[in-house]
Image (cartoon, rainbow over all chains, first blue to last red; front, side, top):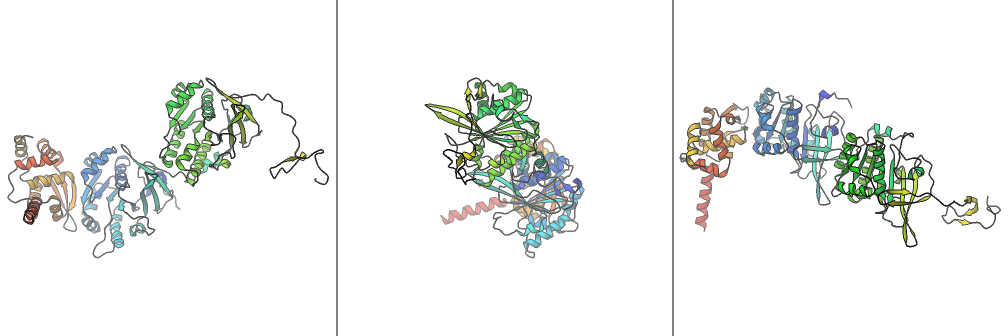
Length: 506
Length: 133
């Protein structure tokens, strides 16, 4: 596919949409925006014209058949778009007409409307509602074709809103095959919430991001589109996945760095798994405080506890986060876990990472994502993949807390989250019942590209100080070679009596 | 609103002579650029064709509306020029943009020689209901 210069592309100016369109829509493409009532077609079309006139010096025309211009102006003002000012400057014209008149007018070789468009140097036109363009003589498809031919005569890039109530019965709408770019808007019911999504079904003449992306209509701003979290990564992220073995992020937990070879590699993914209350968040707070001590920016994304709670918790282990936040070394971001819109959430994380440039990130917790997104389907896995890719691209040493439901011991490292293969390091925090006490054990279950000794270390959490790993005081007795045992592979090892290897067993 | 104040505005502007003039102006206030046939405007404002035609000519002569001849379907492009016309007219139109304000202005205007079509239809429907009852 040929590379279009920026000049050939019409930038919509709608936040996030141009990125999905690889820069914009090829100039003069007929853009069809289709969707049911209330999906945001009019808002998208009006914003296209508004951004054109106010940002890109491309005057535009808005053609309305049913919506009153006064109401459209009122609604636009809610987004901060001053259409009357642009009308006074001759950069926007809102025309109220009927479909029949408009269709006939556009068909005329000397169309008054197109003459007006030329006079104001219009480059964009939005027509709100192109359904029912058929006539007694022409079939709808043919009538639409004739209509868009009329628009094509001028140097206009049209956005045409088409109400399509029963959009997805599998059959294509006649207008879809004629249009060059088709953007489908929809409202999806997700667990009693409504989520807006858009899909670029086709766009002739350039590349674009396929699939269903999310968007929001935001008071005071307009439309914001968010790339679907599953969309392919850029090559830079893959390249960044290679570790720099000279840079590690120390943990801030006394005694732990010795166990994890001095810290986690930059660009690595670490999961700390354990039941609720075992000390995962304590470790996380020590990790970001250690980063701040070293002058490294640290970000904590919390889904379980709001920011004041996190600050309070930190103070109980002797960490005063507020001055670190004030100095720009620590950033806490809370997102309520209910009704997480995954594309928007990921977009927010991308933005924070881009602006704050953290060296360390803590996500508290993966399990809460699992509750919101579900662990069985692909959505959670795709989101986690994207998150890991983002952190690696930015060479961030990321720590993810994961609540494992088992109180004593663990039968699997990540429970329903069958993603341990994606993770570089796994630390298990376990309660160990000794007498009438629960003691805390820490095991490094996995440390990719590092020497790993699978020993469970005792830890303790002390008020005002946080967690520390206790020194291993006992002398370890000499271990026996495998040759002393049988049944190792069948997971029931039995020690041979007497000599290590019976006759004929070698 | 004082009837006297409305009368002063009407006299000062000297551009709104009838309810049809007023409703047509209000229509153009809400739709500053319209591409429509006269019949379609008649349908939108709810007066007889002759009343609308007369009011249109009056607004055109007063310079409150500009008409550009369309190329098809007998539709013309009407452009409202009244938004920058100063206090009396804008005050009058602001007042008439509400239901009560519009009725107050109509009450001060000379009584129409013909009943607005919408009102006539309602009147007839009422008569039919009374007869049926």
